[in-house]
Length: 113
Image 1 (cartoon, rainbow, N blue to C red):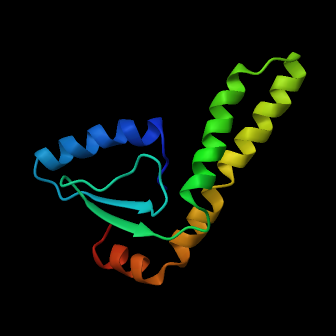
Image 2 (image 1 turned 90 degrees about the vertical axis):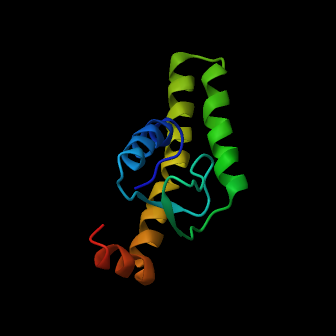
């Protein structure tokens, strides 16, 4: 399951090295992403998701800006949990859309992905 941010940035280096060693690299990613972009080093297979880039960016920005909020420990803790929940709410619909994409799943099965 693709994950934007540091997970992808770390994985990107691994993919580039695999490609340099002659491997064919296929990246399956949602069509809405902040960091996952096409590259000459790999094939992109994208699937639609039920949210916009603006919604994704808004919640990620709120998550990071919330780190600098003031308040009691309990208030900050509750706000962090709320922001984490909003961020993780992008993952479930992404997985559902991926698994319901029959054409992409067929491609992955046929290519022994």
